[in-house]
Amino acid sequence: MVLVIGATDAGKTTFTAWIANEWFARGLDVAIVDADVGQSEIGPPATVGLGAVRRTLTRSGDAETVAFVFVGVTSPGKRPWQVADATGRLVAAARGRFERVIVDTSGFIAGGVAAAVKQRKIAVTDPDVVVAIQSADECEHILRGFTTRERPRLVRLPAVRGTRARSVADRRRHREAALARYFSGAREVALDARRVALRSVTGDSVDIATLAPGMLAGLHGPSGETLALGVIERAEPAGQTVTVTTHARAADVASVTIGETTRTG
Image (tube, rainbow, N blue to C red):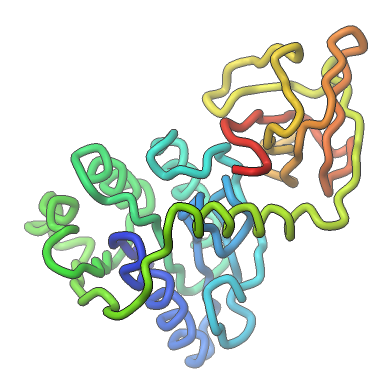
């Protein structure tokens, strides 16, 4: 298993697609875990996604989405431990199904908190190889704790030069477009809050009266698996009913996680 780290626009996703294609060309079953919750290529924004490589990729988003875990945020600096743990769960699931797994991470690398988060991702995913794509030494504070260990093996590659850095506005438009595509064809369904548990991204109970239109939510099945995303349309405390726009069926939903972002990100 390979985990890729590097700054924003360093070429992580390009490298991920390249190595996935190399393995796929050798006849191996390959999966990509997309842990960049804000600029997701696999699965919608606010999720960690798992994609199966069924054909040669032009980009990692060409992988077939087979599962995703809702984390409720689109900034990698928010709820980073939940994002790391979700990444670990998907990697564990992928290892049982695929011969090769690649984890593409966000560009959140600067500072001590970011280093701790990336180190947590390395710990929970237990990769064979960590590939650091960097212009200079911007990943070294993350790698420092692993340099004397036999595993994971550390590989350093130069960052891609000449690419145009995407602005904050570009990234926001990317998220909005991705969510619009995801919700295309979705419909409104009514959920009975007496049957369906409402929780925050930290697992605390949520009062139905605090819900507002536009909130992004994750809809889960009986085993906690993410079935689909939803957008809160209406909440009726008197009737204990929450109406959401989603692709899921109301009968399949056992719980709802209320995210810390909206449909417009």
